[in-house]
Image 1: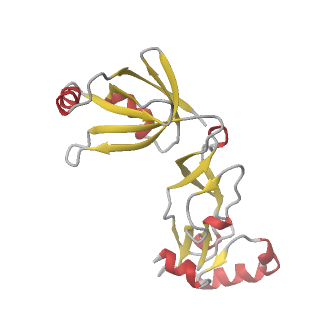
Image 2 (image 1 turned 135 degrees about the horizontal axis):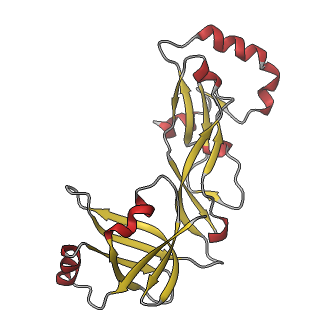
Image 3 (image 1 turned 60 degrees about the vertical axis):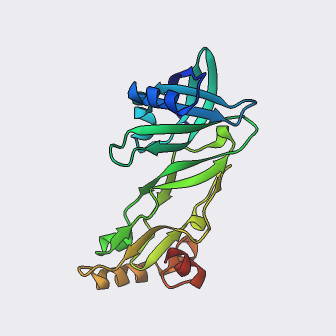
Length: 217
């Protein structure tokens, strides 16, 4: 996974006055935990540009007063009116300790159902995974070619390699719904042509297990 560098300065005082002074100076109070000691530091708000305002996922190399700490962003707080960053929490990485983070989902292929006039739904733009730092994926690639109208693709249908999804298997990642302009005949013809391929598709028809439907609701 790609990493970006954020430079900061250690905070000696962590009270309300100190925090307000930092924000007035357009600095963001931060904390990194997960190591031997919790470290409080501050950094410029623009340091988060390539970490927060991007669809990609990154780990972080924190450089604080000569100390380099590998980490991931765990939580970030924004002002409810101005959207200015108020505070950020980081978690220190260790090669032998699993970590959780959100990874973007990238859909590939041309859904048969969409070609027939259906509408693609993509509830999850990101999925939370758990893995050792060295196994964190840059993205989750999902092929939706086999999805016809009325079909869904679940978290449990996605093959994983050295990481675990922190979502139930019946969470819907992609689905194709019927639209008013859907060409029903085209979808049925396509289904007949591919009847022999049913066993090879890792997708589930809509109206399957009740647990899956309840989870989506």
